[in-house]
Amino acid sequence: MLSIPLGEDCGVEEFRAAARHCLARGVAPEDVHFSVGGTLPLFAEEAPLGVSTGDVRVPRGYANLVPKIVCHSEADRFALLYRLLWRIHRGERQVLDNPADPDAAKAQRYAKAVDKDIYRMQAYVRFAEREIDGARLFVAWHEPQHRMLRLAAPFFVDRFSNMDWLIATPIGTIAWQGGVLAFGPPAARPAEAGDAVLDDLWTAYFRATFNPARLRVKAMVAQMPKRHWATMPETALIPDMVRAAGARVAEMETTAPETPPRFAERLAERMASIPAQSGELLPLDALRKEIQSCRLCPLHGPATQAVPGEGAPEAEIMFVGEQPGDQEDLAGKPFVGPAGQVFERALLEAGIARQKTYVTNAVKHFKFEPRGKRRVHMKPSGGEVSKCRFWLDREISAVKPKLVVALGATAMLGLTGRPVPVTKARGQVIAADSFSILVTVHPSYLLRLPEKERAEAEYERFVKDLRKARDWCDAA
Image (tube, rainbow, N blue to C red; front, side):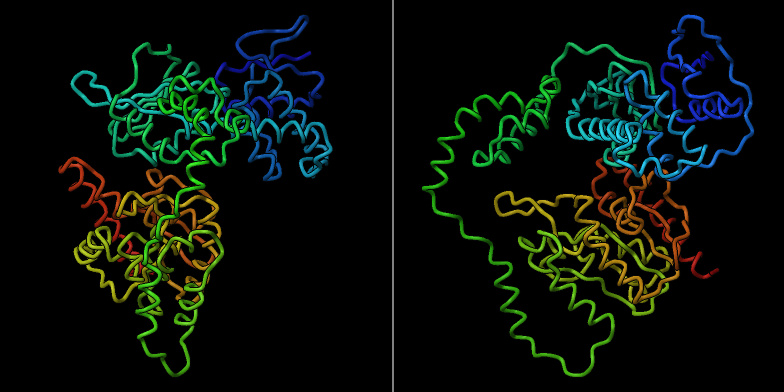
């Protein structure tokens, strides 16, 4: 038997090199052992990896599974991947499409487990503010089941790019400091408690969103395993809230419902006073009327109205943001609120006339959380972005821009159907089907930066991205 040594934190490239080496030697899956951390089976022959120049082509489904399965904690993950690769290499290219195949089923199960572990890390990490060597740092502790830190890191970089943070785990650390992402060794669980202010925010949010009428304890524990509770301050509320759930439901049943906001009523009154236009509608005008009647996702319910794009019908540059804000929702026009004002100023400095562009959003309805009389912005989910992609594609087809400027990660998700970290792709021009995409930040990101110098520097960088878009179109 041939033994292939792999590192404790083996990644995709290391496994690919090992798999190609075995394929080049014609080693069958039952004749190879992938040893992780130096453990060798009895009578095994250890084979150092050589250089393999063979070109191994695999289906996209297999290529997409490899980065996830190599992160799984099961010892047989590499043997499973090599067994599938061996079968694909010998003609079974559709093996992953057969859910009854034991290897295919296990591979999908491992990949889903890693996906769930990544989701739980994204949902359950709680930062605490600390001062280390005179610098402010947000730190968190998390206990993942699998070695998926490199797959989970882009989410935190994209979401928390304006602060320095560190996430420590028993399998390694992720650090984001000064705009640089780094991975470090495992860490011991800290003994100190969390941040009192942030803990209060989490508990207040959890208490406000807890619905006693939909309480399912087993489902809640399955979704939020107890091993994560120690690092989540809001979980201390669960026992008391579960005990009081019955009384709260009874109280809710006897309480009169609150009067809903009159946003939609006021809009209907305004629209009724506008005389109907005569004549044939232009294609974009007809599309805007269709968008106004959109019911593809639940966001249309609480929003005042859909907010379609506006601008030049044959614009060379189209700007795509995330979604309408509070003021856009009331006005029915994109980018008229605080972020829109920053956007207008940056366009002016970049030498771009807004009236010659087309401006829209990836999601057409305002998603928000009511807090008293305020409506606080909430980020659209991937499903909501996917539903609205139908409208965005039709806007692009109608305008036919040379260049689409994606303002933020949600815009890129709407344009491409896949998550793209803005920090990695910013300032780049990416070729799409019939147009090109330039990636930059959303203007609202500039408003969230607390430090004046950082905010000014990021604004200048944003203007520079817009100038690049202008110059690219001029040269195209």
